[in-house]
Length: 170
Image (cartoon, rainbow, N blue to C red; front, top):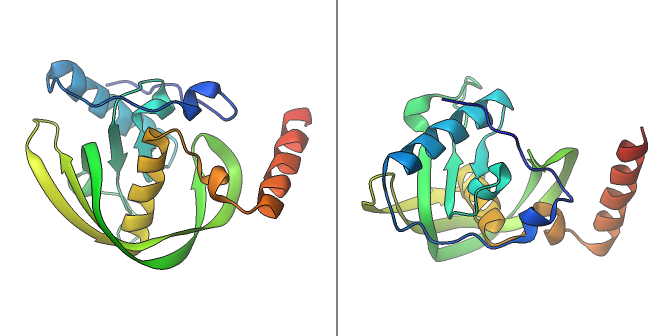
């Protein structure tokens, strides 16, 4: 296992679309394991392949339980996700490992149904709502070259740009 480098905004790689995974082999398993170690080392709840420089449609989500802890048995390894259904709206205060130290409310779907494959290529369907639905949508956006800051209003995006410039100087 290894902790990988996380790609940070404004790296243009983050704007690229990820490719479908077709081979479910040991290399993919190592990538998923390394992504888990990387996500945990940064106290993240989700991580997409592109965030570690791999343009494959893979993502992880590990939502903390009520005690605030993340458990490996709750880890979702999502490969080639497809949103099958979406319902309702929810506002959620989001952050991102690729956009450190910036948080803002983003409008997402409250509930989603997701089709995907696991690390062995088995097809699965997942129903998600609230935090899990938001985290999945956030990570799927990464696979499509979209960052949460791209979903902000113009006013909030200007605030982000201002904070980014301030952080880059300081």
